[in-house]
Image (cartoon, rainbow, N blue to C red; front, side):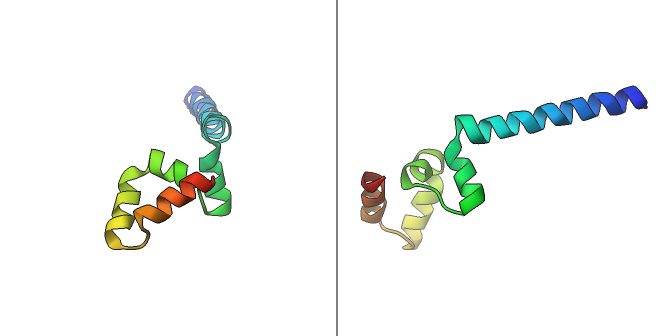
Length: 73
């Protein structure tokens, strides 16, 4: 069991490093969303387009507001 435990620990550590790398280097807006609780409109439209469409459909936000936020960023 000791070798299996060591392998599992190594894989968990590697996964944690990969997660941190992806959040900080590849996709810094996701880190902002996790720490501050908000994201830029461009990020939301690009990565979560269906969510934005749902918010527009529900009337939470308008297409005009999304476009204005994207231009301001």
